[in-house]
Image 1 (cartoon, protein in one colour):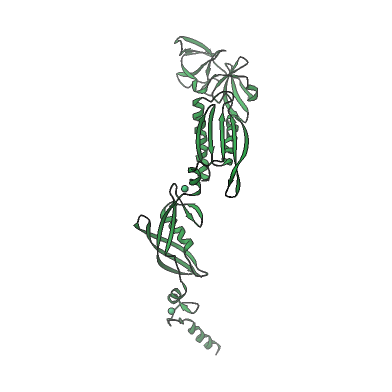
Image 2 (spheres, rainbow, N blue to C red; image 1 turned 90 degrees about the vertical axis):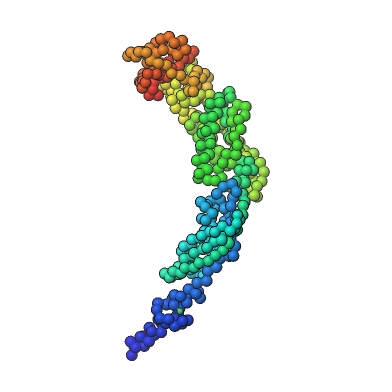
Length: 357
Ligand SMILES: [Zn+2]
Ligand SMILES: [Zn+2]
């Protein structure tokens, strides 16, 4: 008896209460009836897509987001706008856009939904209305927004054009790299002023990082000062000034200190590693201790001379100024890779620089 009752109950369960069809059921309904009656998916009639006119971002839920294409942006907006029944998940969504006019697209949307292991497909349409705006970051940039100024200066005299160019390159490269990680970072403007360069930077944090890097890699000194500039979006906005002073000398320069010439190999965190000329002896000194030095030859001004003969401790060069042979002492650890060698003349002597330096 028990088995018969069970069998009858079992049979009643395989027929859809709606259409009476036999087969696998979802609750009391077959897949088709369930799909028709329960899987009600809706899209708004219009979707507004606001694109930034200056970059590749679009407005989504009151915020600006990056997008690769209009299609991707529309798909992201549709995922937000679609309404699916409770307990159902939108598993996939693809869209085909047909341009109706410059500001309107017809969107054919294919949606795949999942509920308790059952899949349902829906095809819907909506109209995408294209709008143009300016995202927060682009508005800032176009409004000359900045939070910080890096004032790059020389120690006691104006930076040379060559140094200014190199430093400008350094700052723009670093800003570009940081911008890849955060759109908030940008260089608003660069101003060449008397004595150096001013960099207007969008965030104080990025300007601080760059100033510290100048300190680390060029042994620059920096001072930070800030002042309340105003209020924006309900918060105080400060403008920070970083006064960065580069030492008078840099890597590759030849300097003279107490009648001794040095070639500068590295500078980091206030420590200068240099080579005494002509002996070739390595020295480490503090930037502070070299305050009274003179720059005898900047890296960019060091020329070459042709080597005529090389002996154990000396070289005979063709002096590029007089075109006469000149004897020069070979510094310790000297190496020569070619026919020419870097050649410096200072008030204290005539030197060659090893190719290993
Ligand atoms: Zn049915
Ligand atoms: Zn933008």
